[in-house]
Image (tube, rainbow, N blue to C red; front, top):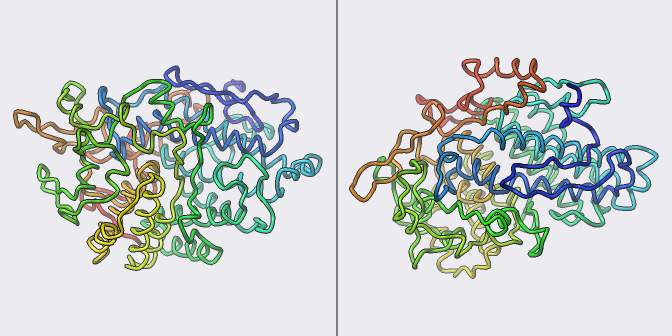
Length: 528
């Protein structure tokens, strides 16, 4: 049984194999001689694998990108309708803990007095530790926001005899992650490099790692804004004082290469595995086109205003922009629907380029956080819109006409409230879909997203085709992913205790995160 807890091993240098549909690399190192691997190489490999596994055509493409309704599948819509493949769920849960272990090893290599001096050849010891802590906090935040309570405080402690780690509550995990980010920011020496090579987010720039730690602290603090009284504002004030992103130059993005094997896994899924499975959703296209949802009587805050990011986010089909219907049955997804939507395989947008820089956090997101922190202030809101337009224009290689840019900014920044801010933030979070899904659950916005039971589209005969989930979500956009079944075998007692704390005492898709206060009587909860 102890061998079954392989995912919690400290210092494991092997990356677990994934499902057969996706080819995966391995880290070919000797787990009995971790000191032989330079700390910057270990960090670089773990950093890349974190990005590969989060931002790919499985964890993102068939989960968070479809939960956030940016993408939908062109052929088989079961995952769009919340039917999750258990093998995929098991494998991702396992591999994430292995990647956490890799970052723990980087920390140990820079802490152990015998190894730290040699590790210092690759960057300041404390800065390496801080960067590893920040990446751990980022990954743990995605994990807990996906499954809920998870093994945290006792995970990775096999050496201390913790073979069966308990599941910590989200409240405990969030407090710890915020404390870790605070400590990481405080320990960074900005006069020293974080890494002399291998860091594909900031290329070793310690000042930018510090800003990322503080900006990520703001994000996690905001997640708790419905449940923690004024504490969330205290955390954001601390982060601002320490220094957050102050321009698009600070964006945390992983920079892939145009050559194998270091290209983006979105590209790999499409053009190496040859899976032409996804395209942009009709709902998201309609949001960008400024169209209300007349089928469900939902109005658009900027009716008729065309978003200049539309051609940045997707390619056209014969000069037209029209997405695929979201959440309908596979049998209802006709050739006509597919032929109207863009064929990304034949005409790929920026996110399917091999060297697409995947954003972990944008400067625009920080501005939207600060706007909400300042009671929905107009200045930060407008700065967020401007930063988002400029960032995505640069990333897509688009020359954005200044007249068009300014006209759009004027049209959408006349006022700001919870709905308008959430909608602009949702647009900016395109391709940062794990955070977009969290914000949908936290705020209940955008209202223009199709909810379970609502009309997705009408067919050629005028029949209403509904979004009908294959799993119960209590008529809300999915609240969580079920715990993987492997946990019931390898860590049964703690798994059962965690399930007992879920709504109805069952391993379901509708138990809310502790920060998720959406309910039918209050679908758009306000901050405390």
